[in-house]
Image (cartoon, rainbow, N blue to C red):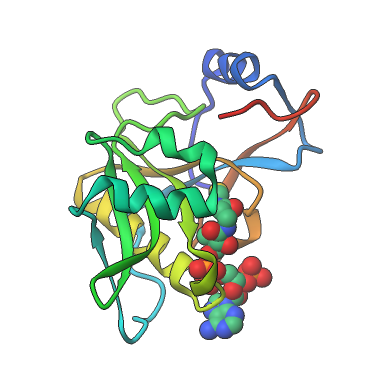
Length: 179
Ligand SMILES: CC(C)(COP(=O)(O)OP(=O)(O)OC[C@H]1O[C@@H](n2cnc3c(N)ncnc32)[C@H](O)[C@@H]1OP(=O)(O)O)[C@@H](O)C(=O)NCCC(=O)NCCS
């Protein structure tokens, strides 16, 4: 594990906000990756390109609606949206931020985040989602972030394929809060 410091105040704030509890038996995780050493991990996928989405916001929100309607509120004119495209049409998406909501201490380091990761159902299981996260991670590196961060996921093994490491585990005290 690379050297990351957990900020206990941020951790407590997250517990309050999400009504969750950190502990080694948690089923959800917070993950991080050191961008200093990061190189593109996966081979290209023919006919799929990746990059920032600059098209119509309503169009991308229709795809988000298909994947998880609760995420639609996070997709606004100010959001940086990164996509996988086939024939110039988005088939997968995620949100990129250079000020990630994390439980890590961010003294003198810039923490970027990849969030709301989705592939529309008809294009799943072709490697598009993971390749998009690979390219989004490279994009965060190009923005001079030191760490890439994944907040609140159950896909630990999937992100580990790219080198993301678990920094903490948590469970919900009752039902997960709506995010
Ligand atoms: C999670 C999600 C983004 C994955 O998208 P995807 O495009 O299907 O992702 P990938 O194809 O890269 O990987 C999915 C699986 O397909 C498998 N796969 C990849 N390429 C494949 C191929 N060519 N043929 C068959 N299977 C393949 C991968 O091994 C992976 O299996 P695993 O889950 O056992 O690791 C998608 O399922 C989704 O939108 N889910 C709902 C939203 C969600 O839960 N997001 C995560 C929030 S943190």
